[in-house]
Length: 340
Image (cartoon, rainbow, N blue to C red; front, side, top):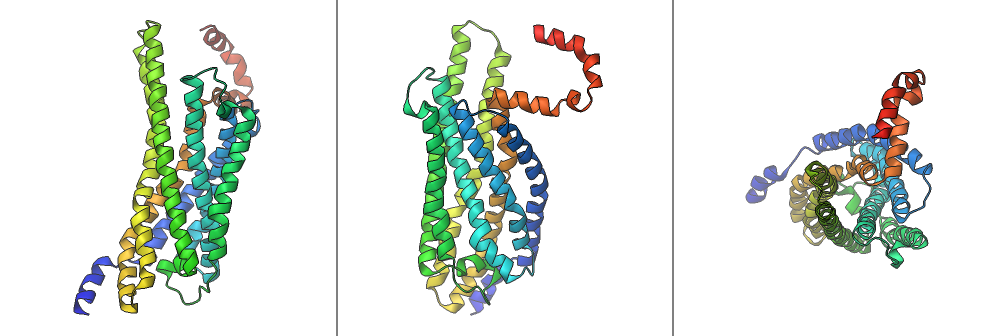
């Protein structure tokens, strides 16, 4: 007992302070994320799905907007002294939808990368994955598979009475034994899915960068600025993907194992393990928020890789749209730019 009492303080973290900090982060993220994704959604509705890239992009926009809408509930559920009813709803529904949107986004980013690979490295191909109808069907299949294998089973198995459960592992204690096993399987699937898509994205954009540089060399171009710009554009997307998602998926496996292992121990051991889960929970919460930040970073993909989106965005933010009288004063410079 003395050893346990000596070690527990090392593990213990003020759960109210943690909850307040996490809640504040999600509330701060919600407003800019909602504004940005509403703008992106508006632009995407005004763009026709004439290419496989545009099909994947529109589904990615939908996933990001869906995730953004879960932020207020996620923030509220982390606040100290939150009602058990709200916490139970967040555990069973809004958090599950949050992870649904994240998993779908990761798959779609992989598909977009593969699409760019075929368009740039193997142009003019007649592969099935370059077919417009196939991309629409595939996008729907991604949603259906993840909802049926991850989302619905987790909701169904998170059905235990949450009364008098500890806040630190409230969601896990709402799960039945089957639910805990399924939860671990879903987490392993998500981790496997992430690293497969990560490898696909790295391979695709590395090949794209090599192709662009070779194209400059074959044309005897000395446009080093253009080469650097192409490389930065490609590796910026890779950096955003890795910075936002990789930390969370690295911590997710050990955290889940520690969560589930508490059910096989005595009451005293369980109390000690729950206390020692708290530091890892803080890391998990921060890395998960970093993953959520990706909804504000995905527009970089749309802006850099889609000319139609970029033109529509520039048209939307143009001062001439809001102040028509400025158009006359800028006509000479605009005509010279067009001739360039």
